[in-house]
Length: 389
Image (cartoon, rainbow, N blue to C red; front, side, top):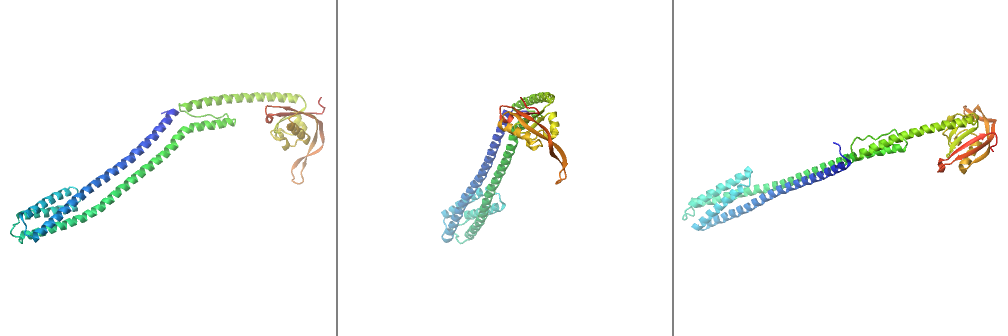
């Protein structure tokens, strides 16, 4: 699917928003889940605590009533009250049993229910006239068993409170771990998007920038390959057209310069005088055939080299340097070109050229060919044996 640059930026913005929304909803989900779990645990814990307090109060009330029956002659009202306490205690145990799923806790609650039910039965059948009878002793025994079972239940409840605290801590730790994993995944995803998406957008501009740099180095054998049908693709196609036209223009210019150079070379050789040309930096760019013969040099020895780095005689060098320094014409400067002889250097054992007798004595005129800027000037020297008029 080909998207325009505008749509690509919009698509990247939408993806970034989706990532932020997903991260926000995920964090909210974890926090909400943590809140619900802790709320459920807290509500159940509060209900169990309230019921436990009620059971404790009922157990204490039964114990008080049991002591009263044992120490004083029980009345019908006392026995009725004890029976009502047993019924309330039994109802509380039934509600408490619904909050537990552990076998051990349910077993103890069931045991207390059995003791309370037995106590209720004994109380309902006890005679008011036999305080020291078998029924009163059974009441005392059942009351002790209820208290003993309640003590066991409190131990279990204390252990379960510790387990509940550990469970809450585990839930908080797991939620924190999940949120941390979510944040890490989001962070890595954001880094991935920040590397991929900007690269997809910036890559075409990098190609264009590289092509422009090549053009700055006058390298026209370059093209921008970009097959997307968008704004950058249109720009790349137009630049490729411009590069083709510039390459054609450069070829025509090179051909024209080559033709003009051949014309100039022909004319310079027809004059039969020594001609050499340098640029404003003192680099030799042209010499005609008579000049090569007079100096006994080849083109590789002088062309595109600074005149001071060659074996050209000092009189020519000084005249050129003076013209370049003044940016003016030099007329009839005396030139002496000694004849060179190839000898062996005793120090190095290599062949060197040694100036012997004078081979050429003449006069030189330097004509500056000025441009808009001094560093673009050219200087043409014409050497002749006759004085120029």
